[in-house]
Image (cartoon, rainbow over all chains, first blue to last red; front, top):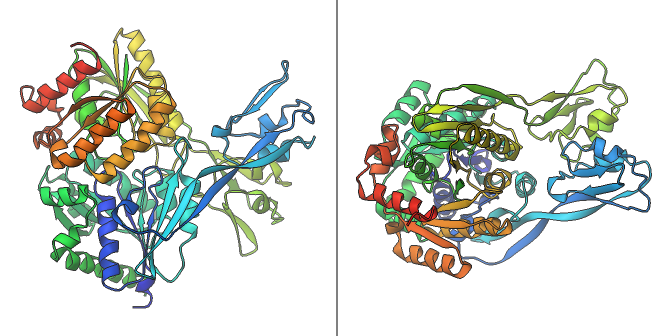
Length: 294
Length: 288
């Protein structure tokens, strides 16, 4: 069991709003109650919600910063080499008019412009991209939240910073950002197992297929939870059968579940059977992971 | 007239409402800007008259026949994308940001940049007018730029075909792609839902629409799920001076319509929910 106590599970979905946060928070809550040492990382930095479900303080916060160049106009000889080196169009330059500006929002902080400058005119300052907060639950479990500052273009650096806080020997649940683009890849790339949450509708199926195709290229182990079972059609189920993808759990469409979620409550506290269902699913996942790694 | 539908939180019903809006008027240009998870093509099966390759940045690749393992690339990379394994630099495709610095500074010219060229934009015709949508390839960034290209094509089609209404189905979140979906539009419609997460995400997305001074409307979808939080959302809109365009009940007809590859307006035009959506569209467009 020692190996299984350090499994890293990403909860993901192509489509937004399928129930990633619902599954992440309830699974975390259940495992903590059962005495496991777990870390929940909310990687949906654009719209982080996991913390809303836990009444807790003892928060440590750290700022995620990025370097942005500052041009010293007295030293600048208006050669334009920094603009040429910038691959993000973050330097605006008019040679004839001797105008040069850094567009902070477009800068990725790669430092190329500083290398380009031969006149020593470029120094760098820190700008805040967001923050990573940690709070402790039940002494040895914790929630880590990546939160993008409103107006910042990419959540990737904040997600990376949150993932860096993970220790090797703990169970980690990562609430992944929606979609299959860069923020999703950053999150699932460190996962041992990916739990895809979908809903049985044509939109759900289309986005599920895209997630599965992506995970195949990454050689990840994965399984599916169908949320809101009972609505929609059979498309998702037929696809799972055809692709031989394990269906780990179904959560029925139920107004009471939706209502308890809407209030920020755990379904596992209202219906005890969910505790066993989630624990069983966790053990199944550990088994699948263990089989591959032993 | 450009109307952008966004939500902050995913899965609030943004695409279903966009599809409904797109089937009220006689002629529209529909732009699916949720380039990371485009779905509207499923309902509308548009023709692919134009397919455009979108270059989503570049990735660095080492030519090991020239590499002398000097380590300069690893030292200068700020994205932690270059690791040292077996005495050699290895570039992680996932972590490489495509800044080009390693390639520029390599004394052996051993690092080449390769275009990320798997993303596409499609443009064509559907039963209610013209449709444009983008599909971002897995793992790629810069989706804001792809959104801009989709919107440019939508504007071109609107002008060329003399179609007044452009409807933009935006992505979830508040990042680059969401921002690109709303800049410069006439109306932003935020589809919210009465959950704690929904309210929290609404507050963040409203910060964005205010930052860009956009006319913002809110629809509370599935308001009957939790009327208490629905009231909280209404109070929030009131305080922030945001217009409440309307409230919609949860209705399983919406899912049935999707399963039948139709918008709710097409599937059940006389249902209560269709009438309410038409009403909301009129309010936003000041027809009443």
